[in-house]
Image 1: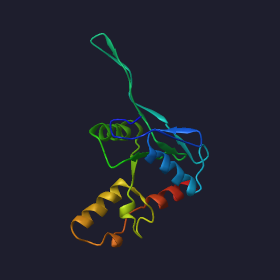
Image 2 (image 1 turned 180 degrees about the vertical axis):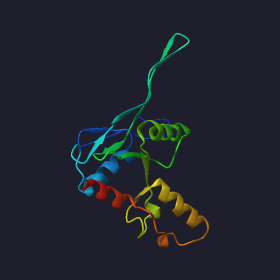
Image 3 (image 1 turned 90 degrees about the vertical axis):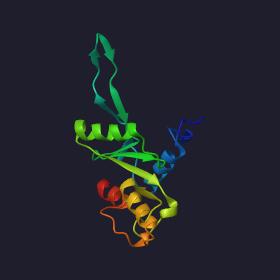
Length: 157
């Protein structure tokens, strides 16, 4: 069954994923040598707004569930190129409440470059690549502050 963004749930290693892309990122983490529970967890709950009362009615808390959380506390969300206003708001609330930024990761094989060294890129890097390509530049020459692969391997050590 598909959700409103067309994502199909998938099971890998007995784990149910919300999308094929999310399951593929899990496989990528395993390729890098990262291990579930040892190096990262999945679906960690973060309460962004606590339950409260308004006009005598109880308002449910607002929560965010990370796709992946590294043991150092880094929060990762896997996206299929769609960044919704709700996600942007939750990212702001994560910064406010937990002092954490959600690293947004996308699968972008057509932008595989020497610089990214992967079909997985941080959304901040994909934005640079697209801008360079739209301006007729050579996106293979872009230098990133950090690549996803370097970031993941450095954090897991």
